[in-house]
Length: 272
Image 1: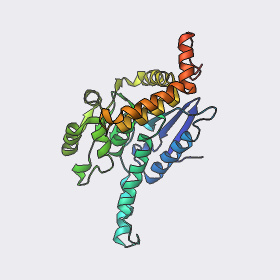
Image 2: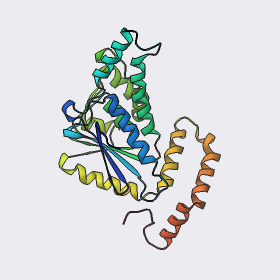
Image 3: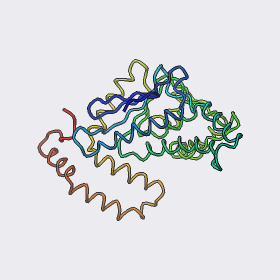
Image 4: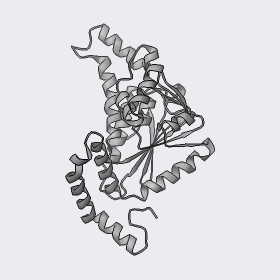
């Protein structure tokens, strides 16, 4: 599929998606939101096939990650609502929900998701950074949560902020129109590693190597189990976790992993 608002390049088991509207610091239009969903769906469709995608990398073109939602889409939706063109629907809510569904898709993906954060990371871009399994930031990264200062609400971002940062830090950022540099983002757990711009590609490759050393099925099952663990007590998950573990041990990945360990070789899922 040909994309316009993003670019998508596959290198072996890695799909690198670049938000590609550098003239507006990669502000997230409805078209970009839809293309991000399509690119992820295409990657997930390869699971179980030869040459499957195993990792999705998100980054931005032109030295910035994402300046948040494109206000032109909101303005157009407001105009449709004012002119009564929505046939009872709420076009502003629909724009917002489209972004939320995209973030939810990435959060729930069985694939590993890595974000490379540079320059502006604002609003919706801030939320997308919170969705990633691994977030790397360069010293240029500047995080901003401006919604409340604009008289609006970080509606779709809020659950991911709370999940990533905890209630206290998420609330602090929301009520202060949060501004963070890369070092503070690292300190509060928003990002997992801070590197220099010159070292970011090497750092990304190291993270990818670590991810690709993990069995893809086990990685997906682990993500799914951890997602449930957020809302369950440990006791409530004992039996389900045991069943997940048993399937993994008896499955082809568990058998291959054990054999590789005993034979002192790399398992077959590690790229040569």
